[in-house]
Amino acid sequence: MTVEPPAAAQPALEAVIRSLAGDSSAPTSITDPQRARKVHLADSLSGLELEQVRDARRIADVGSGAGFPGLVLAACLPSAEVDLVESVGRKCAYLRRTIATAGIGNATTVCERAETLGVGAGREAYDVVTARAVGSLATLAELASPLLREGGALVAWKGRRDRQEEAELEMAPQCLAMDPVEVLEMTPYDGSRHRHIHVLRKNGPTPDELPRRPGMAAKRPLAAGQG
Image 1: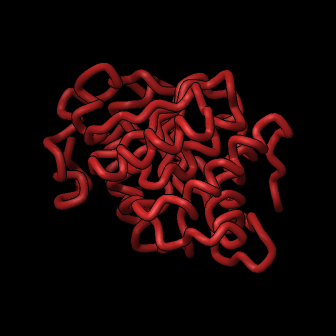
Image 2: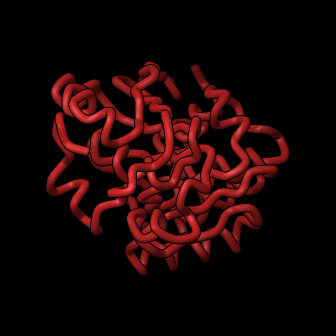
């Protein structure tokens, strides 16, 4: 299903696409406008099918990279505050330029790691955490938990379903305070295949031991019985 953006968002979205093509430092290999409208824009827009995303007032896009889905969601949800969380300086610089060029005033670049944000101003501050092609589900759940308010949602864009990855997530629900809710199959554009959005819910307060120090969520995912 193809999701059409609000008419008011079209100029900003086109500016984002032009930025990909016109900025040699764009942190993605897909910069051709026609292809980018499908692979980046349409794929990001599929998140608007979720009520949690549409109703969110604060969104953290973790590992934002070139700004997908965060920039797209910000353009389409002008009443939401969207933080683009990215730790790599050159990517942060690109995001700031693109926000300014596209005039997306409700998007902010946060140039730090999610773990650092989760012990500071970002702790339990967000309704939704988004992530697209960033790490395993278990890693994302651990990174998202400190950022989400109780009842908030992690919305993770993934490709083909990986049963082993999903099983790893199921191993540590108690110590992450995150419950898998649903997996939605998406067809954001004609010819797209094996696209899924995983939705997880924050089921309680953030455990005191989270976040762990930067990098640990990816290097040593929490196992059953921990926490």
